[in-house]
Length: 114
Image (cartoon, rainbow, N blue to C red; front, side, top):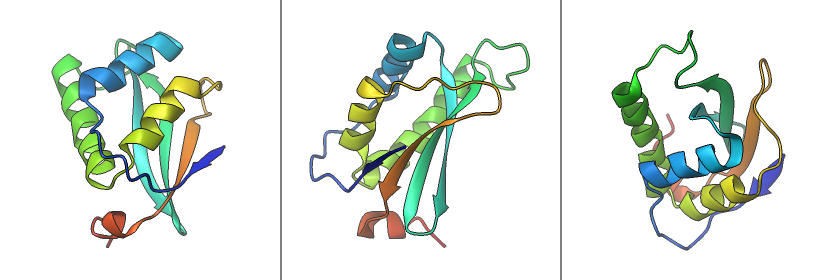
């Protein structure tokens, strides 16, 4: 698991850019989730993907879901860390095993936490 800290580079990550990295890296439009554990935020690339028979979202819903999560990533200053991780990650999501990125929680992220 890779650990990244807050990046001061603020170029936002775009939905189409994110999807491009998914297709380039793994050949599928995987779903992901964000969650907090301790002092870290985790981005978990799940094994579910658009086009999978059991995947619950259509193309429009998928892009909206991704956009909502990417907005949090961008607002909190994690865009460059996520971008670099997507370019370099070697692991592949597979059934029952997500691929994770560990990010240190920064001051901007604390606004989103309860």
